[in-house]
Length: 344
Ligand SMILES: [Zn+2]
Ligand SMILES: [Zn+2]
Image 1 (cartoon, rainbow, N blue to C red):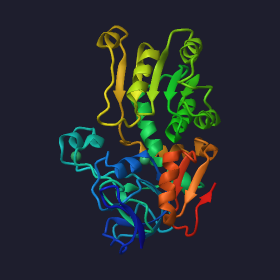
Image 2 (image 1 turned 135 degrees about the vertical axis):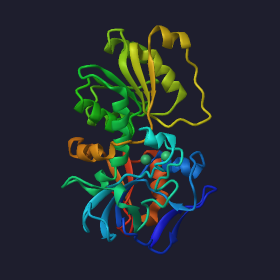
Image 3 (image 1 turned 45 degrees about the vertical axis):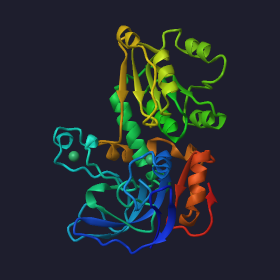
Image 4 (image 1 turned 60 degrees about the horizontal axis):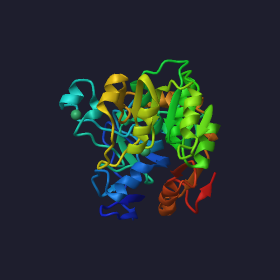
């Protein structure tokens, strides 16, 4: 079978390998749609700990083609989304209720073979059935949606309250849709790129702003009558964004750090400011117990408002470039489709 593998040292190639074998509690999947995201770029750039050689792709929707002798949860022919994490079950975190913090965690597409392949084997516990009628490319977004659901769980936001979101990529768009579903409002989304602000508007943002504009601070003050935001999300992963997020939070506000920042990045905050305004800074990582909920939410999110770009396995290089360049709202590889790139 053909598979896009990372070999370390920034080397990615389309390889021919044998189809993996299926154990009694495994399922053999034919990936139909695999999301490309910044994590893949970080892996290739060497900023993200991976275990090469392995197939890339952790945002996976796939058709079940074979099940092990003891599998009863899914059937052959069913469309599933892969929850891309295996936890050790024996460490402190696994045994005390924060399994996603497991230091021995292994993830398909990062440490194990992922979905950018014609076939993939995963344990049945990672194959989640998708609601009927959801197309494969939307099912492939379950993992990023699940990360957003966990982030909003962390925020414990109350309906009827305003929220500010920095970053209007696919994650910002999903957060916007989820915030609207939760009854938050107005939802204000900030991004310097006009095409991204347009995406946020399509996903229901009440107002979009360019954080680099000269009137930004006045615009923000006008939205909240000078009070500030009770909830602010950094979906960029930038120290400057977090500093701005803190500055526009209201007293007793909460700031959620959801974007993946460079590990060497540092920011400048005033401890007195955090203390005196009783601010809460929240980290959020991965998708503990939210993959099922995310799959259930897909029909309510209006994901067809996203301009998705579809690429064949052969065109993985073009897909990776399109992800970096932001050519599409979301880039996906379609491992079962041959031929050239197909734009949505
Ligand atoms: Zn991702
Ligand atoms: Zn563990």
